[in-house]
Image (cartoon, rainbow, N blue to C red):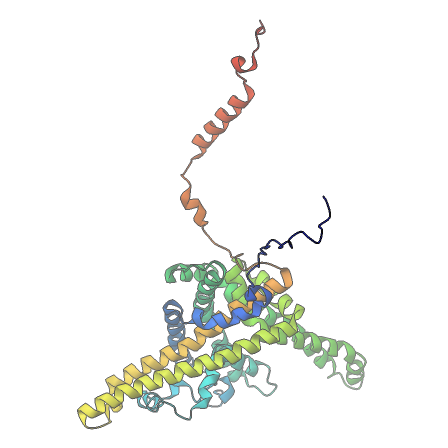
Length: 417
């Protein structure tokens, strides 16, 4: 190619097109998906499940407090459930529950703590179990409350996390009855998973108890315990580590079973493994979930209060008085509104636990979000049903056509005699 001379016209470079890929921020920063929790939590199916769980928890707690061992001395303030927030809704008459919604932007700033109410239902009874001054009646009351709470959450939290898992992984919706059937079939897994660490703590506590009994031996007992105090400290460290993992990873156990369709051992090992493998990342996700949950719960609470205020404002102009909320029927409707507001906090809590599990699993095991256990493959619905007889005959005909070649096609003029 001849070199260009000065008399040649200047060459214009051809325009080149460059394909620029779209930047997916959710792939670069997966934790941004935490801000989808509000959309996932605002689901009528989850709200109905949370309302049913609340009614059973409140009703069960009321019945438990009527048991013989629930003496006034046993009803310790820390043994009551739903201690987060301004007050326990079961301790308020309907008129006072309605009064909390009477002011649209009131001073009830403690309402944001309701986002932690599901965790409180388990933590508060467990705290009594580890008190050295707890009486036998207090222990019996705490164990009864704990077992009832775990039984209720095993059904309804399992269903909530199942619906959230399918929505997050496949962008599909699961029916309420299908989710309940899923959780009922795995009731023992949901129920027993948190009890396994408590059983391990009880075993370690029993070893420490034996050391204490040895210490009662006159003269030599304290020396023996002092010489073996390093072993006792190791047992205490194991108990503390197990309890911390249970406190921070308990919601992930439910999410594991709902996402993987597995059993209690898998839920236990994954929850502990993911938390201790990525503790900083887990704390970051929990902080994002709590902060966004505070804002969401606060807005929902005051939006409901503002709606009640506007309704009361309009009725007051018609009735000429503002005593409508003192009516028992109107107060009952306000209690329903209050229950749905609290139910949103519970729906948000379990939806956040499911999202955190997906993010931790992606960070530790590099599993994509779409890997969710499905009991029925939707692609199978597009294929015709073939029974075994037809399938075997089809396979035989296929094998026959492959093993017997056509003589005309091969051109064999001298077939074997």
